[in-house]
Amino acid sequence: MKRLPGIIAAACVVALCVAATPAARADIVELTNGRTLEGMVIREDSREVVLEVPWGTVTLRRSQINRIVREDPKAYVVRRVSEAIERRRYIEAIDVIERLDPEAVDDEITELLSRAYLLRGEQLIDRGFIEQAEELIERLREMPVEDERIDALGESLSGRLAELTKLEQEAQTLLDAGRYEEATPVLGRLRGSHRGRRLYYNRLLGRAVEGRARSAQASQDYERAAELYDQVLELDPGRLEAIHDNWLYTNIYPISRELGAADARPSERRLRQIIRELEPLLDVDPRSPFANYFLAKAALGLGDYPRAVRHLGIIHGKVNLRYTNPQQIEALGRSAAEILLQSPLEVSAGPATRDWQRPTLREPVTARTAHFVISCYNPEMLERIRRVIDFYRTDLSLSLLEKPPADWAVRCRIIIHPNEAAFVAAAGQPAWSPGRFAWRTRGGRLVEHVIESYHDAPGPELDHPVFTVYPQEVALVEPKAGGA
Image: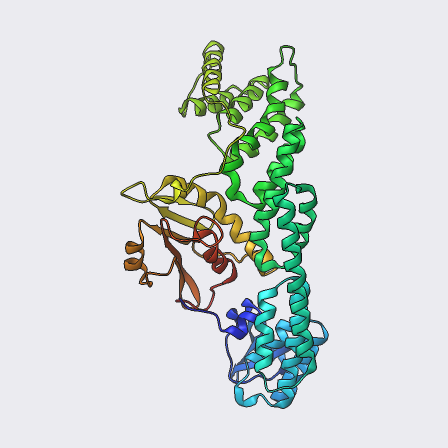
């Protein structure tokens, strides 16, 4: 697996996308229309000039150019870095110096780099990027500079870590005592203060919100309970199996009472609203007999018989039904109601077992999402990964990179081998490794990236390492120029 250089990873993953250059200088091209472009002339002849600029290259005809002013390389670096620091664009300042030939880095430039590191370190701590700040401080301590601000930055980080440890202990105590309302704001503070542990805090916060949802449900405040269960799934999609029936019950129960009342006469507007409320449930659980049944009832109320038949057919496990006779549709609805009575919701679902980890098939099953192609030997594991992997990709990128993840030219493959021996043979990893992430490029373009693990692999925080280390790699790496 190809790893990021430590200094770049500490500063910003974006540096992966920057090609190294032997030296830096500014060439200021004054155009005949009065505009100027600043960059580096990488090729020129009697007909045209090719200028490298931050966003790519620009080709100009000689007839478009008034003159080219060439700046001393060191003067350009000092000016560019100083301007970036002044604008608080510390990553840009670090990147300019990192691209220099080591021979061009003198004491003045080293001092500028140290200053950029210090300011970026303060920024990282303030934004909750604790691990990146720790790496940056280590790098600062290796530099040939003496600055008491480095020790001050280290003390600031130590103080933040002590504060976070205290908050974690407080949150855990509140959760263990069932004081979910009090735990919620504490965990909210932790999520914003230590982004590297955001997924862990998401799960703890999901536990607190779930406790509040159950309390609201016990009080028959189903609307509030449904809102809170929705929040649980946003925080931790992996909890769907554990809370599925409670979540579905609190969302559907008020609708079932409304549509099932003897004198029920909902307006057309209300029926359309009910359909909009039920559609998100089917996005999560397309085969839910309860959501399909009541959506079919609302569709019948609107006279939308094809849609009603389609959803009633799902309950029966049939597709492409073409019933148009009202008596046939009524009979289909009655038999669907009988199916519902035979499969009641369990609103006290306990924790899930680990059976889903084990391979149950001889041949792999496959599923595709917006960004992944997943294959494994257990349909339940396949469904679990399918439900949450795109969420983790986006959430990790937003929390760790502070921006949406980059689009990929190709989907990432997730391969769960049937056992450790098959994984070691296929991935070429040592037996102690629970997984592998690698990517390959051709001509600077991503052509393949893959996550490999195996059934029953040890996972440090969630039930399988696919949900931990490797999605973080996928979220962090923007493999546009590099590979393994």
